[in-house]
Length: 255
Image (cartoon, rainbow, N blue to C red):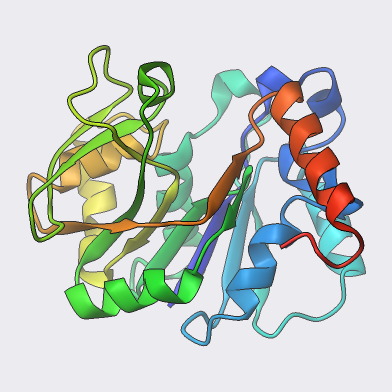
């Protein structure tokens, strides 16, 4: 499978820092945030290539980072989605379609692991892949959170006893469960053509959960409880907290 890191956002809640630096390249304990995603991806035998979607404004910075980081175990590609500001961004689903078309994965589909470039997941990534293989269908990462305010900021999930997704609402006013969906998914190759169908039907191109909300009504989507810890670098407070925590662990102990 291929992995896709969504890195074309503009990090408006981290301004003015993100006026000059894309969020995935912000240092956490001296390392670009994106490296905390690439490290576990490089350890997954199932992943044989990684695509990073950037915007036009920060593409040169991603290209410079890529040129200076040294070789990866797999091909690592940075794409420029052409957007120049938050107002003309393609959105997460728009960037998935863009990446599929630019890489030819719309013509020769492969399974696709999609993850947001502003998160750090301290979890068992191999277990995620194993669930995908066992279900032989698209899966979404999920976790429990008792905080209604946090739930209202995310996709909220209903699952049956077997773990199949039976309900999904992106950013609901009144959450129906305490299960939320962070931005990490594995889409089965047979479902990738539905990205284009969804967008042509006028689906919301922004938050990635909107596609899951649509998809689970048309085909089987399963939930995988992530376990471990998740760091969402969404604002200055979370950035400072994560940076301080990882620095306290000492060199080489970020994950």
